[in-house]
Image (cartoon, rainbow, N blue to C red):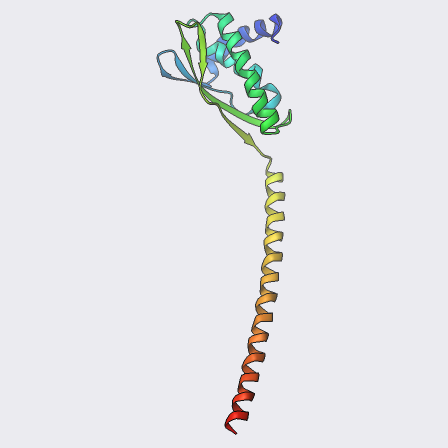
Amino acid sequence: MNSEEEIARDEARVEEYRQIYTGVTLKAARTVELRTGIIPAARFADKLRRVALAAFKGYAPRDVIIRDVSEFNKRLYDVIVNKMGCAKGDLIRITVDVSYDEEGQRLVFGEPKIDRFVPESEVKAAYEAKVKELEAELEKLRRALEEERGKRESLRKRLEELLRELGG
């Protein structure tokens, strides 16, 4: 759960986020797109809470923001850790539309988009492994083609012999 110390720290940074952080885009009245930027997976909950506090300050009560972001973060944790298999240090970016329902006194989260960033070395290793696999398959197909050409040539010679025997 969120400790009061963490929340106080986040609130202290809200004004800083409002001034320099571009992770919020106004989409409609009381509806924003929140973006975490590229962060380690282990930091997504803090980052999303800070961005939401910055985006909804003055519109939604603090306790509503904390409560609803906390619930949303629990769902995100399941997706990020259990479904995507991200480790703490994996780099991710979360983008989600959020609106404030004034009557219901709650934040309504849309479907999040979670991008995972893979180090170039991992991509290169996977690429090189695939290239080797395809090269081996190509070589196998070349050998099979040569074998079939040899069979065809043998059949052609045998056919020529048979035609000579029949004609001669």
